[in-house]
Length: 176
Image (cartoon, rainbow, N blue to C red; front, side):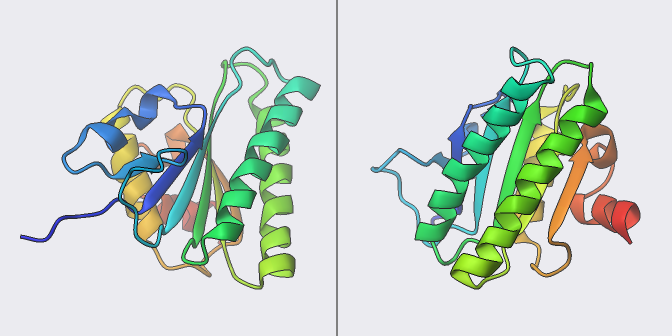
């Protein structure tokens, strides 16, 4: 039997919803700074951004920019990466403001990838605020990282958008 090697790199805040990614045998993902972990041609970079203490103002925007920039540096070093997924969790307030800031950061990264590295890297923001089913989230995330690219450049979705369907289905309904 072949040993599955994780193809998802995780960096930033390790959110509670990420736990199934690491606890399955074999794990579905590895931490980006785990140099001993086996990783062959990662397909996705996932960055966690915990905004619960940041509020909705400049601090949240700064955190989104910093974490997405760190993830972008990792994407540039791995030509096999086709998906950057920014996973955010925050308090229930200021949802629209948070999504606008996340969308701006995602759009900036997507344009940088096209301009600087000449490849299509889809950037998806998943706001998992209110997610109580980490197993379902891990399933949606891993399924999304296996999707073909070129479907969308940038998409911002909430947990309610993907709770009962795939990320691809939610993107298609929201943007097409």
